[in-house]
Structure formats: structure tokens, C-alpha cells
Image (cartoon, rainbow, N blue to C red):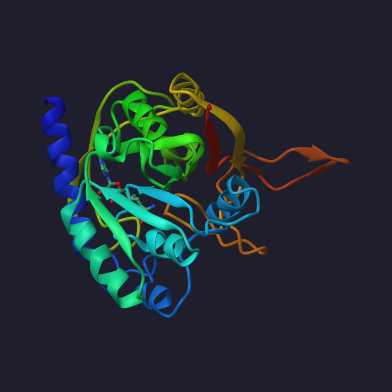
Length: 286
Ligand SMILES: C[S@@+](CC[C@H](N)C(=O)[O-])C[C@H]1O[C@@H](n2cnc3c(N)ncnc32)[C@H](O)[C@@H]1O
């Protein structure tokens, strides 16, 4: 398959999911909660925004939400007082966001574009770029994505990236343990399946192309694009489940435990939690 064919496959997939998500058949996109003033952002995203803004919040800041999907987090960012521009390559996703923004009474500017080829008109316009959960695996050219992010930021602007840890995407099942995806980049992988991460039983068949990017590759690409890493965190638990994690455990967190657990004081601890998410914050150099 050519690069264009891989891209078309993924575009078709996301058009389909954008029509389905948040229409009532999944609990992941609880649009009623959003419409009634709640947020669907996880603790990890909220903490990353707090950290990146130095505790000052986003009021009056120009924020680009990259790969916004149906735009739940765009709404939350706008409610924080940010001037939000949302980018996705799915016209259907942006149409859903337009409806949702109207229903929530917030304004969001929408741009239909490839995340790895951001329009020149966006260059140097943003204080913060926000991208979260399930964005990088669709991107073949990580350096193009990262240099686009750096280009649209003002000097001193920040990238907030909260993403599935590449370790998680390696694991197809825990019992039996099936590891069927690489940790780092090795080109395209074409996959087929049914359902979506928001509703495993949904009557949806899909074939997509996905790409692995290791944490090292992400950080190196960011640095190479002119972003200084100010924070890198690998989370051993998550506040939500995209399907690969297990839980919730007693503390309401989801984990992916492997192995027999470490020994301490002659007793075996629970199996070790593996990294499930990572947060990267990068600052554009002045
Ligand atoms: C998993 S979703 C992001 C989910 C988001 N965190 C949320 O919870 O709604 C991935 C998004 O990336 C978009 N996408 C995938 N490849 C893209 C590309 N090359 N350019 C722009 N958007 C892309 C899809 O249309 C989809 O909306």
C-alpha cells in the first residue's frame, strides 16, 4: 500500500467513528455530562494543563487542540477561558464539534487539516498545543507532526501531550499474554477489527494503519523540533480505561499489571503495574 492509501484508510475509519461516538451507544463520550457543564478530561490531562500553565490557567490563552475528534476536550478548554482552535482531518468530527459547541454555548474555531502538515496560517499563533490519548499512532512522520507543533507555537509556548504509553499498545491481551505491536517505529501496521475503544461491542468493522512511536522517539523528535522537555511522566495508572487497562481497582484507578510482583519483607506484592500513559510537556525555545 502507498502512503496515500494508508492515510485514506485511516481517514475513512475516523469519519465512521466521528459519526458514531457520543450518539448514546458508548459511555466513554458522555455528551450529556459535557452539555451539563462537566468535563471528560482525565486527571492526567487536567494536571498537565495546570502544570504547563504554571498554575495560571488558560484564560485568554490561544490554544490549539490537535486531533480534537468530536471535540469534547475543545469544549472544556474553551470553558477554561482559552481561545480554542481545533484541528482534525475528519470533516465529520468537526461538524460534530460545531453542534456540540453550539449546545454548550462556547466558541471554537475549526480547521480541517492533516496534523502532520499544519497550515501555514496557524504558524506562531498559539500559547499552547494540546493533544491527548490516541493521537500519535495515526502519524507516520513523527518529525513532521512535532515540527508543525513547534511552528504553530509562539516562543515560550508549550506542547501538552498526554498519550497512551507505547508499552500499552504492544499488548493485545494479558491472559494469555499476547504482544503483537512493536515498541518503536518500524513502519505501517495494517489492522482489522470490530467495535471501538468507546464501545467494544459496537457494530463497526474497521481496517486501519497504525504506527508505533517509543517514548524516546517522541522526546528526541520534540527536542529536534526546537522544544525543550520540561516534564516527562510515565503513569502507572490511569483515571479511565481505553480498553487495554484493567480495573477500576480499590482506588478507582485502572492499571495494567504483569508478572508476579516484587518481594518485600518476605511477602509477594501484587503484580507490577506497567506504564499505561505518559505526559510530555515541551517548551518552544525563545
Ligand atoms: C483517538 S482520537 C483522539 C481522541 C481524543 N483524545 C478524544 O478523546 O476525543 C484520534 C483523532 O485523530 C484524528 N486523526 C488521525 N489522524 C489524523 C491526521 N493525520 N491528521 C489530523 N487528524 C487525524 C482522528 O480523526 C481522530 O479524531
